Length: 252
Length: 253
Image: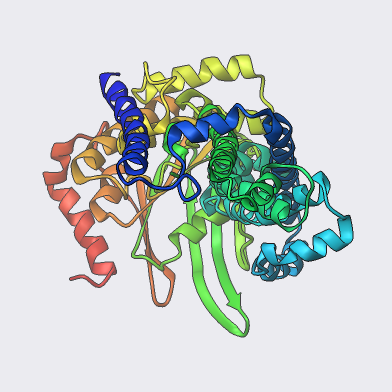
């Protein structure tokens, strides 16, 4: 327990030290505000109502969470379908591996053509960037069952469903979570790139607006907000993993 | 008494494209109810394949396989328990829940199965570990849990595929003695696959020797050593004769 406390103390200290270094750098180096604002100036930006922080946080947050959740449902769902049908897997899996190679960011202009701009296309952007890691790791996890475990279930004439629900799916959970963690980080990047390419709300949109006037404190604050949304999503995934996956089975 | 397992000229051929690989040829032996038969041989001799045929996991290509008799019925889905080289416990289940897996798959009444599982954990010496996760157990303890799992649905036949092959030598000796005790108490027919010659002789009421390249059954003989077996029987003159006989068959002498 005290070891835990020590780790937390160090974690907090490291963050405080970074902010302190940032403060000293700006203060002692006489760095102009438009190049790098001080921590105080950054925090001050949060108090200006004209930036519409809460609306923008809500919009970007919605895009990230909606895209991520959809990717989770579709990714895990498709992987499940593949375990039921070898033929479907043999047909679609190579295709999906190829599609995975598309830099999703390059799809941005197309998504705007197809879905205009707003929350929906940016959610789709987040979705398209994070569905593949979830799908590929889930499919891998479902395939990973030891052959002898299959023998054990088959020797008892267990059904396909029993094999799946009692052995394959719980065995794949660590893989699913490892994909979900990668996807959590990608989802944030996807939504922000979507907002850069075309939007009228959101933190990415705000950053482009204030960039024109070299309002660096607001840009700093926006980056911090985006990071906090990402940390919230990642933290939720981590908490869910701790709850569902036995310590020994976790992959990272 | 009628044999419980009756094998006559059993052959198994694996085909990969046009290539054929003879995995077993002419396996002929009987196992009486309650016997513990050791199948011994080098890798590639088909002993695991034979076990899978007995488990109903693989079809055989020739010969006759009959399990069960008029006095000892056999239901292929309910009467097979399996133990493998790796314990293969489900990491996310506690020990008791792991032992219950076959009962769940067979849809047995869970209240009874739970009591039975607890009794079996006591039998294999794991009382107090019911609520532990597999990673909290040593390799030998995990294999004990796997043995309890193989017995939970009260099968008539237990098939073991090198169950102690991954354990260190001392634990292995200890597990041999444990297995004999469990076998005596549970009164099961056991087919025990191993590549350990002395293990085969020490455990078996009978030893079936298989050779590789070409795969064939080389010998089948009863082990006439007193029971219960004790470790000092390994220095017994007759023990030495049996092991020498197997070494000779496997071309090591």
